[in-house]
Image (cartoon, rainbow, N blue to C red; front, side):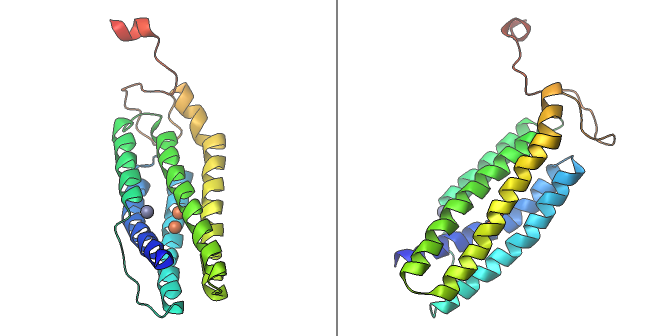
Length: 183
Ligand code: FE
Ligand code: ZN
Ligand code: FE
C-alpha cells in the first residue's frame, strides 16, 4: 500500500538521519550551529518514535525500506563537508546540506499527512503534522543562522569563532578570479 510503503521509506530516512546528524555536529565549527544540529537530533529521535506510532495506528509494526533520496543527500553532505573542511565556508556548506534534507522531509511529511487525512486516520495525520512543523521550524532556524552568522564569514573568508582554527586553504564563497586561478 502506497501510504505504508512511504511510511517505511520515511522511517528508514529518519533512522539514517539519527546517525548522520552527530557527524554534522562534529563538523560544524560555529557553536550555535552545533547546538541547532544537536537539538534537531533530539527531535529526530522523536520523529522515529512517532513513525512507529503511526504504523501502530494502522495495526502494523514499523518497518524500514531503504530511502534512496536520503542516502544521496547524506552522501552529498559528506562531500560538501570534506570539500570545505578547515575553511571558513564549512558552516555555510553544512547549513546548505541540512536544508536540502529538511526540504525533502517537509515534502514527505506534507504528503503523508494529507494521505492520512484521506484515509480517515486523524491520529496519524496529527502526529505526522507535529513532525512536519518541527521540520519547518528546523529549516527556518537554519536560514536565520545562515543569514546572521555563517554566510557573511563564508564570504569574507574569516572564521566565525575565536577558537575555530583558521586553516588556510583560503576557500571562501567569493569566486576566484580566473587569472588568480590560472597561475
Ligand atoms: Fe525528521
Ligand atoms: Zn525517500
Ligand atoms: Fe529534519
